[in-house]
Amino acid sequence: MVDNLSDISFQRVIYSAGSYTNERIHHLSQADSDKMLAINLQAFEQVFRWASEQMKRQSQLLDMDKNSRLSIICIASIAGTMEYPYASLYAKSKRAMIATASAYRAALAPYHIQVNCIASGYIDTQALRDLNDGDASHKPFVISTQTAVKHVMQAIDKNIELAVFPRSTRYITRALNHLPKPVLNWILRSRLDKTT
Ligand SMILES: NC(=O)c1ccc[n+]([C@@H]2O[C@H](COP(=O)([O-])OP(=O)(O)OC[C@H]3O[C@@H](n4cnc5c(N)ncnc54)[C@H](OP(=O)(O)O)[C@@H]3O)[C@@H](O)[C@H]2O)c1
Image 1 (cartoon, rainbow, N blue to C red):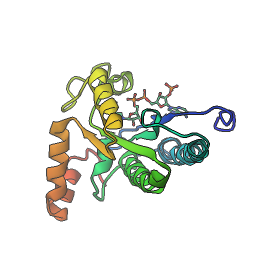
Image 2: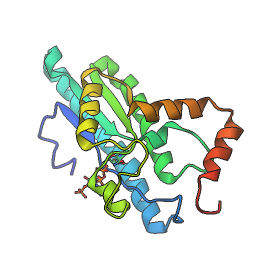
Image 3: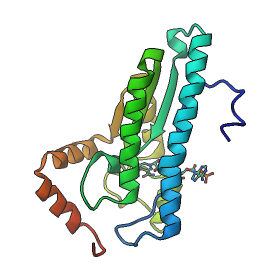
């Protein structure tokens, strides 16, 4: 896909593809494991590598004004903002995405290419509804897609390195991250529905 796109110039690339399996309930199968790693991590890194090379060339060719700032964005998850031993592959791959985006942000700053990472809580998308028998309204602090778009566009406009929303979920994860590690591990382990 990226080879086919090599002749097209982009001002903004957003990596939004994602794959999720509920590991709190199901043990991870080989197929789900391969798919999550491929989509959440490997293809993400490939696309970021391609986009950064493409934009570096473009930034050298063009005299970019402030309104035509080049940007690369990825959609991670609030699940990737916490570190604990029983984190799922989804959470671990989104955590790696957050760290990778931060490294790209530092590397591309000299080229004036902005990199932003989005770490959202639950968004009421079709995919989330499908995972919850058609209704995701019981999910804690779930937000509409319109609200999510507003947050994402704000994060890009304000060039926020890691945008964590909604506010309620941001405060909860921040508080959890301040707990002593053994307490955090105990709380999160007790939330697992399967044996470890
Ligand atoms: N919904 C939430 O509560 C939530 C919360 C935090 C983060 N996120 C993240 O937000 C992003 C979008 O999630 P969503 O809820 O809108 O779920 P979704 O509909 O399942 O979005 C996944 C997207 O990834 C694309 N995709 C999956 N596998 C692909 C592949 N092999 N090649 C190319 N594209 C592929 C899908 O494309 P097709 O439609 O063509 O299959 C789809 O557009 C994901 O990265 C997800 O992890 C979602």
